[in-house]
Image (cartoon, rainbow over all chains, first blue to last red):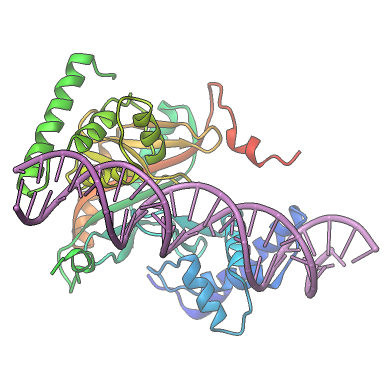
Length: 166
Length: 166
DNA sequence: GTATTTGCAAACTCTTTGCAGCTTC
DNA sequence: GAAGCTGCAAAGAGTTTGCAAATAC
């Protein structure tokens, strides 16, 4: 399920090529910031998603001297050209992940520890087809999120701790 | 598919009873604001969803003298006790709808006119069961949203208009 | 009567905007 | 060199918080 480093590099290269092409087509400039943000997001391990602030701080702690505004701008551009996926999970900031790395997948969020797991179930495609037909829509993409309680593992109940009053 | 007025009243009454019970159980107070917000949300026609600001203004334009903060508080409480559902559609404010009125359903958002349609497809339950088992989670609820382009009707391309530069 | 809830305004968080200076083409 | 992009700080939008006054129990 996880991806080896050489394969990872290859995927990142593919992503950069797509970005090249997109920037060319749209007559936009190839700034180093745009490629850095792309890289940073593509280096995320599976099951990990990142918000703008964390990404900004992480890049600042490295050699980059990027600004928050540029992170926002670049990330929007990457979402637009389909290289990055944006998620709006319930009661969380917007979270981002690479679009090309892992097969298309959906998400399960634990109500207690807030951990996010990924899964894949092909029958969602059937629903998509049926509904697209019956509601006259050319369905381009979807977001499927399950919310539940971990039944095994050390689920930490972060949320409950937060809410606890004493 | 739509609900007659007498049935509507009955559903609202049922919602109020559940709220009564919840407030009793939690030792919270039965304030008129909480019931007014519930009512206002339950009066929404099908396919309509409301955000906090619109709800606040709508109530202010009626006989109510509710504050924004109270709308936020009440609505959170109603979500907690399961009477109201909160949605985080892509690039939209949080939107709310009644939980008891129509059968559980999912949503299709048009990428262009931003209209929201509702649909029902039972096979989502199968996916839920399978994934809950394989990822060891007691899945309580889900959010399924399709994003597409209307293929018929007068789809107004609101979004494209907004983005247009000339 | 006491504790909770409300209303208001101020604070906070996340995101966008305006603009001078820098970079890409 | 012109247009686009960046960085910064300030502004905006949506939401939360603190506190005095009002209300439920």
